[in-house]
Image (cartoon, rainbow, N blue to C red; front, side, top):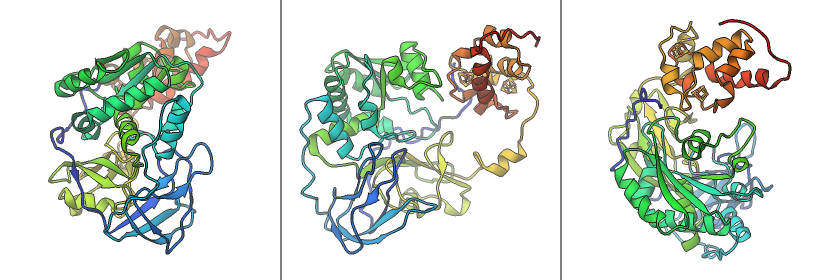
Length: 433
Ligand code: SF4
Ligand code: SF4
């Protein structure tokens, strides 16, 4: 089952990606995604070219940050409440750095080093540094290329499949070869026939390659749910996919690895879906990382005067941006500009928790067939037997039940906490529900 209740609003599925004009100025955060903040390695007055490093990582959990324009460094802000930024005024000449060269990749170590040097972090979701995922010392038997993009509005991964399938094939081929992974699953939602045909052709050229379709809808693109849907392996709360022999990479991440292996251009641009109820012309654009969001909103003819939220990402997991002068980042797969409150604090406050009225939406939403409302009651009563009978241990902690609950009940949190009760010995407490 999945969330049929959530309107998908995939308005831009057929919108070919348009490359935006180079911005006059970019403003690059030195912390991007879940990577550690870099230290600046340029100073005000320096001249840089496209692909030059402007921020260097300080630990293995970081990746370098590169300039996406050629021009003059005009400002470097201090790290404080907010992360540090490097501001670069473009000279409009688009000179490319001599450091941009095709990497030599032929082993696991050389792949890890190249991916790190490219500045890559996950192109969707939290933005974990990709080289850290590749560096696992656990035996991986399956690469899952996540093509699900289950959030409403966002189609940037879908356009990657339609427009850049050759890069995806190269990227998936490199990862499986260098990490000696015998099986590669391209996982995508049912009903996406064009994308499925393209990926089937790519899978034919990868050892152990295949396409698997999963039910369309949120949260089927989250790692834990996707791992279960594709392989029936359960990733526990304390585990990561490699504990179950899985490497899960987003399809745009894989496509970027393929591109980088061919041209050596680091991550200085990305595709962004611009949509939402305030946007008159929804679109997919390529934008230089560091471009002000205002330029993308202007291009998409956004009704700024009607905006309530502007989110980096989609309405389910997206984060409110600081203002329209905020920059495009490495992990910004979408900008969702909405005229209605989606997750506004005041709105949530006004709609605070009420009693369960047994509407069944949480049951319908659960991807593994649990009964979240009964699990919550069992947890509230400390009824360990009942929790076990309802198989609380199967919960993937995906958050779908809490999201759909009209009574705003904290189902996921309680079910996750209930696992502690059932993992304890001598815990056969009695109680009825
Ligand atoms: S969705 Fe909420 S109100 Fe509906 S049955 Fe589940 S817990 Fe109860
Ligand atoms: S019970 Fe667990 S697996 Fe099911 S929807 Fe809720 S959080 Fe997800």
